[in-house]
Image (cartoon, rainbow, N blue to C red; front, side, top):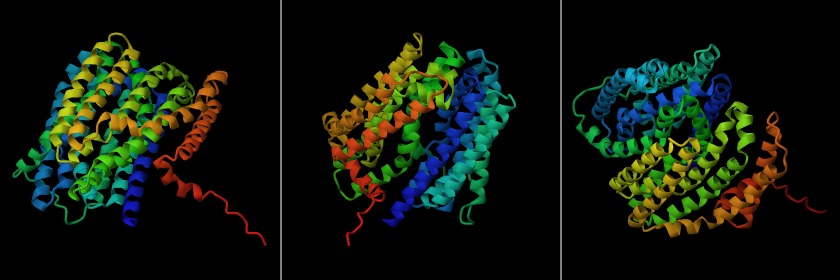
Length: 484
């Protein structure tokens, strides 16, 4: 149990440290760079994210999960990783001129050159961190990821202050990947082979084929709005959408990103023990929605003071978009563990198929909606998340015999808790006079009211999540003084 708590602690510490560093960088850069500059980088970053799936091709997952990982297999995996990285780097470099002409933005060409160089050096760190994760060397993982984040934010900030514009973000990304690789290699042990080999790669490539297809569809669907908005509107619109989406995905970075690496091993172990995966899955949904739904409700109601306090008044246009994306985030949180459960139950094909069914719909609706404006794009994402929930529920019914009715049933207490948590922010919205120059007072009061409503309703409804909080609350309870 101590080992488990330590593993969870380091995993969350890594995620939170990385998130805080990057978030501080976002706050600084939002005040230094203009919306169109951030939008320009966002378009290039989407292309990089999609190509990254093919660069990685499941190699890191193969390293982590392979039962008998010999030095020869590590060298072959290194060979695969290097060949794919070079190929993707060349594709990005060769397509840079066409992409720049497509968007009518010459700056994109130079950004993609820098990103191509980032791809070329990425295997020298990514493969090693897979080995460290396999060996549970989580302190090493912490130092690598945090060191890379510090380098990325530092370089981006320095160059942005020197008027490098969107290119400062690209060089920051390069610096982060370079630092990531240097630190990873400094922690390399003598047992880890240093040189790749380019034979015996079939096993690694076979492993990554099916999962990479689903991952590519998922990443394309999640990141396509930036690409479409950049073409049909302008780079400033991309910037507004990117900032809105960044706040909505904050919940994922703070909570689910620390949990997801542990979810698949947990459900896989239960399956090996012959246990029913339905009850623990429903319990996970029940507890996650008690966190996510109040978060999104509070963010929606406190949108204007939140954006003004963090980014400044120049980003006000992103608030209505963010509010709609909060609805999409709340819907998505209901099925966020579904893919891991399917894989754990031995149905990797189902996990890939549901992505291939739902992501084209998301892409199609976003393309159509982009002609009408940012709000329509956000609405299309809400619609696609609702359809995704229906589709994934069909797959889960077949996989672990858990349908949509059962899932929504366990969320009833979460809905009540969300209403209670929303009372404080709603009152701030109704009665606090809008003062754009001073956003912090209403924001802090709204957050305090949401916290009180959330915690009080959590304890009142005896929600399962409250049981995990009672030991923490007990530490702040003053013991009564014994009478003489």
